Image (cartoon, rainbow, N blue to C red; front, side, top):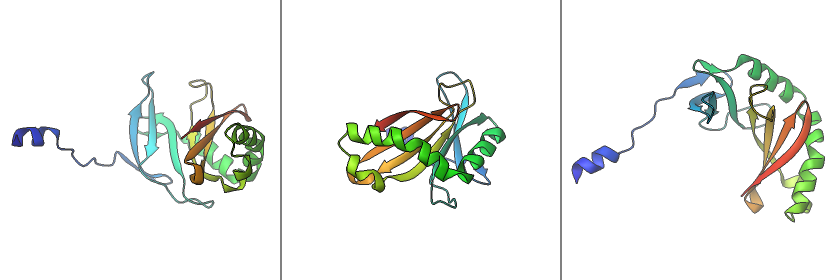
Length: 149
C-alpha cells in the first residue's frame, strides 16, 4: 500500500509567477485553450484585499488588462455605482435586498476583449448568507449578475 500512498501523495506546487501587483499566481488553460492567471490568495490594494483572475500568455497576465484594471480601481466608486442597480435587483430576487450594505468587494476577473462575452467582472461577497455576487461588465456597462452560493 505504501506505493499507492506515494503515487497519490500531493506535491507542493511551486509558484508559477510572482507578479509585482497581484503576488503569487498560477496559470490555467481555458476550455478554448487560452491562458489565464489566478492569484493563490488575496493581495493588498488601497481598497482592501482582493483576488484576481486575468487573461494573459505563458509569460503572465496581459499588461493591457493590468492597466485596464488599474484604471477601474482608480474610479472604483464610479464602477460600484454602475453595478448597484443590477446588484440590488439580484439581491431582491434572492430575498437579500436589505443586506446591500453588507456586500464586500472581493475580486475581479479581466478578460481579453473579444474572447468572452464579458469584458470584466467584479465580485461581492455576502458572507452572512454565503453568497458571491459577480457583476459582469461589457462595453462599460453592467450587463448581468451571477449569484453563487
